[in-house]
Each structure stands twice: as structure tokens, then as C-alpha cells.
Length: 370
Ligand SMILES: C[S@@+](CC[C@H](N)C(=O)[O-])C[C@H]1O[C@@H](n2cnc3c(N)ncnc32)[C@H](O)[C@@H]1O
Image 1 (cartoon, protein in one colour):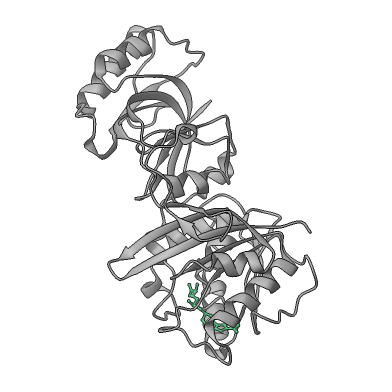
Image 2 (cartoon, rainbow, N blue to C red; image 1 turned 90 degrees about the vertical axis):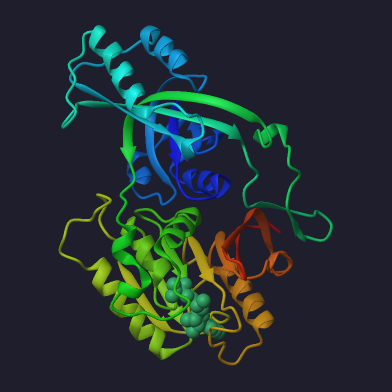
């Protein structure tokens, strides 16, 4: 069993992204989840998970319980150790300094030498208390397809449950936190409306970006999603209706995916191709790619060329279904019924508040079999 430390503001969405690199992800407390297996390469490329650790055990969020757990837990490791503690959102009130000291002492008593600078093993001690929130997760009405916020309590998902958790685990993989180096305004080509790299990485991961997979963004804009998908090893394909965007996306992809520096996530960067095209008439054969991601124009800010926005999104959804079995759509409105009409099944939906007047919807779509 593994412990996942989630980041970002929405644990529900973070857990959904984590499922692209871990099996049977289940939230256990604010900011914490467990999984039955992980792929360390994939964990390194996650946006909203910071760390995965081999779970040593779980108890209540207080130091006495944590000490008792560590004193008796079976440990089959050799080498030096360090304890690093965290109190998620300051929720448990446990002093992390004291936790590190006292849990470290227990490891010393059990025969380990401490090396704070370069330990062979890091023990993560995570404390979290509070209610497991529904977050931005949405459900669809079966009859109409309309999205709604689920009830505050959901036994199966532990939503609404009040919990107090301390989880101890040996650090197994950490995600690479270099997103700040790809802020949209710092890229070689920038346009307003570019997606921030954290959300872009998360949606790329949910769409299936990984070595060996091909990801398409039919309305790629500045190439924000494609850059993130390429950095986790996917081969990426983009189209955009505007020549200016095509040239700009090429500039960004060349800069980030053809770098001579070793790839930060440890996997080779994917190949890329970008061309001018209409997302409703893609120059691709059926089933050409593994996943599609697109950030639909918001009407007010993106040029929509010759289409009405509704026709554009419906057309792009139909084309996406023709070329891929899975899609992730980001937009300023739901588009869930248009997705259904285009032959997609809604696997999950989330709303993300960007600021007071902008909520983004993220739809995760699976091709409906006919
Ligand atoms: C919201 S932006 C995408 C932003 C992008 N995710 C990024 O990070 O830069 C939407 C893009 O759709 C493009 N677009 C509009 N109509 C299109 C069409 N029919 N086919 C392809 N692209 C289109 C616009 O040129 C714009 O670049």
C-alpha cells in the first residue's frame, strides 16, 4: 500500500490525476490518499501529487499514536534515515519539528543512524485532520446529462467523513516541481488565455500522456498542454486554426521538447508535430491517437474563425471521438450534453474556480461503445 500526498486546492481532482500513475486511489484525509500500487516514473510527472511513499501504517493525528505506531511497525530496511513531517494545512496542530525529533529518536532506538542531508531512506510522517470534501467533483444527471454537485455525504467515497489521520511511509517517489519555469508569460511565445502548466500537466496525464502514447490537442493555442504531455514522454500532435498560434506553438514546443538538458522527469521527451487545421475536420485517420485534450475557446477571448461556438465544440467533440478513445475537455461551461450527443460517456467531471468570474469545467470522456 502507498501513501500519496496531494497538492493543489482540490483533492478530488488531484486524486483523479494521481490515478494516472497509481492504482485504486482512495482519499483518506484532507491532502492524503492511498493507492495499492504506483509507477514511480508517472508519479514524478504528476502536477497535483507531491510524493508517494510505501505506507508503514496509519493511526490518529497525534504524536503519541504516531510514536506507538513507529515503535511496533515492522521495518525491513538498512542504511541511514531521516524523518520529515508535515501537518496538512496546519489542520492537526501537531508540531512537525517535534514529530521529526521524536520519531527520529525511535528510529535511532531501533538501530538506525540519522543522516539529515543525504539519508538512504526518508520516513514521511503526515498528519491531517478535517472533513473529506467533495471538492470540485460533479456528477451528471442520468436523464438529462446536466452536471450537478453531489450531496455533501457519500459513504462510498468517504465524502463528508470527519477524520484524524497520521500516516507514516517510506518515501518512494516525488513529483518534479519545475512548473514555475514554464509560466505562460515566460514562454518564448505567449498569448492571453494560455493554460497554466499545472492544470495543463494534470489534464495531459488524465488523457493518458506517457511514453509510447500519442496525445492530440486540436486547438492547441500556444501549445501549453502539448508541452506538458511531451515532458512526460508522450508524442504530441497539435492543430490550430490560426497561423499565428501554429507558429507560436512550434516555437514553444521546440524550446521545451528539444532541449539538450536531461529531462527533469527522467523520461525522454516525446516527439511533436503541429500544423494549421480545423478541429472539426482533422487530417487524421480513425483511432490515430490515444487521447485528445482541448481547451475550448471561451468565445470572448479566443478567435473562433468561421464557427459558432456551439458548432465548433460539438464538431471538435465528434472528431475527437473518431480519432481517440478518450478525451479531456476544459472549458468555461459544461458542454456535457454536447459530449453525450457526440457519443462520449462522461467518466468524471470537475469544476475549478479560476477567479470570481471564471469557473473552468474539466470533463473526462470515454468513447461510448455503440
Ligand atoms: C483557449 S485557446 C487554447 C489555449 C491553449 N490550451 C494554450 O494553452 O495556449 C483555443 C484555441 O482554439 C483555436 N481555435 C478556434 N477555432 C478553431 C478551430 N475551428 N480549429 C482549431 N482551432 C481553433 C484558437 O485559435 C485558440 O488558439
